[in-house]
Length: 348
Image 1 (cartoon, rainbow, N blue to C red):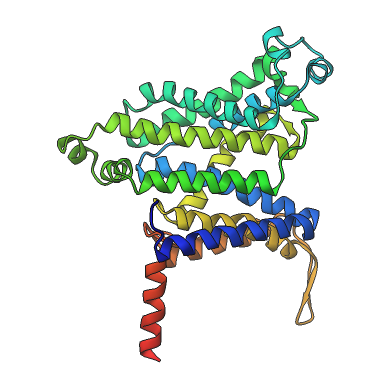
Image 2 (cartoon, helix red, strand yellow):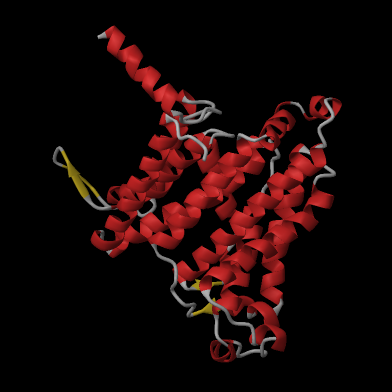
């Protein structure tokens, strides 16, 4: 049996307390708050996965919207019954081998993630022949290609009509369960020998090659792992909103995730968690600025879209005073927290 140290015990207790809070939120919060809570979990998983390839490995990839779309479509097709598919595909019938496929939510999510990871594996061969801005352009083109393909493969995706009336399986337990699993696995990767190799590639890929690191396969590991969890996140998102269409998976989704990992700190999973909460909850909390207000006798009419202006200003302020993001490349640790308290106690 592996002995538990203080940090391990505190981590386990923190997870248990968090799960207790998830149970409380599922039973006592309003439907609106639960929905935002679920969105936070899904975006945390997507952003952490994206940070693995973009922040930890240093590969400027713009693929998340394409991978999320693949996971969403695969999961949606698998959880729909044959009768639902027959009623939904009114332009052309669905191909028979997909029409007869039907399974429960968990294996559908796993298959959605595995299919997305396999696509990431195939995509990695041409993609990692280039670097930097060229890599960004190639992966951006992949996301646009997925959107065009899903719009035109009518017998598989139902084209522009999309898939509607999906079963609602997603709840806080599903979302935060997968988010915790993703964070634990990604953190294990980051602090493993593979993670150190990824950081070496980020800092100087030529030097990493000179040190004997097989940079192609290290980047492939990060890309495939990110693809798997982005595919699972797409499946959770599909079941949450119960409708998917090609117009949902635009570059704006990738842009949101890029904002989160930059604000939190490229390479920091702790920063990603903090930034996800700030971005998802902040954009909702700021809705009050779009309502008519009276400030010191001055009437300000409601201006639609003003919350995004205020939110953008706040992001600019954060980036001015924290140029490397909220956490930079640092991670939370119990030792650092205790040392901080000790220093403050000495100064009092």
